[in-house]
Length: 428
Ligand code: NI
Image: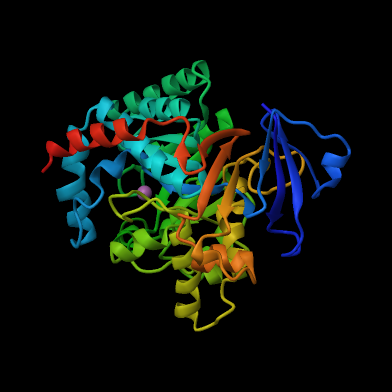
């Protein structure tokens, strides 16, 4: 289907300039000054007047656990270790694959509603995540969470086999999903298993998705056990030579920055989750100054407690300014880059993350009549500082509407709410 978005505002054009954007075959086929393309005889199956809309690239949530929206607001105001081991893990262990399917869809609903078009996931039931993506039209990079001591560990082997099965399954149902290897963390995976994952990633050309240096306890324990910081430990195991996403990196030693400043390494900051679990605030300002690549994620709804990248961007930029006492620590423009183009690079999809001719059409329309968007002095500032996500009116993924005029086009929202409430009844 081809779509013509007429008279729309683009973020990288002057505030008063309007453009026409043609979407065809899942791509941004052409962009020109408003009226010129139509005058040249542009035709499309659908023409939308976007006179009161801003068009922006879909946001990319580079770290979450989508099925965990089932545990939203279930375990709050408790310390990290209690939260993870006493409250969350027991529920996780009792979830069925069917439960996970509905949890994934609930998360996808929230992400689409707030302008996210791609998410990076660490899953217990990847098949259900893949199915939920296929059914909703959502894009994702999915990894099966791996735990265990060594490559001969039965549970680790089973989880890896499952991960490879699910990749095949994803291809057969046409989901917009890529796959990564997902060793959970250095404190849940042994040295041998981590080395094995590093070898597998090299052999198969796959990305690695891992939590790193999330807590002070993890940082100190790693030094006590291995004589190395978590970052230096990953370097020793060869993992920093792979295309890798490192969720958190709240605790970095001075010498860690140089180890992380390479084009294949992507730090994914999760400001709300780190604050809520009382783990601190990642030094993103310094990361950027030292040449690290930084993307953003929400982490799960069990620790955030939302999957909303607009509120996450606001927290990130304001937090960096506050912590550094530098109003320029992270500008609105840099913050938007982190949530779009940097995210695209982190997942190896340079075709995403910008509104440019030839790129894949993962696009979000913003309603400029929302009070938070007025007056329209500076759209980037409005999106990074004022917006809450509910200014999103329409969302396209690969050139297809998944949200249109405030309605889901692919998801039966009532059914998802009904099914997730039914699951929650078991845990009340
Ligand atoms: Ni996480």
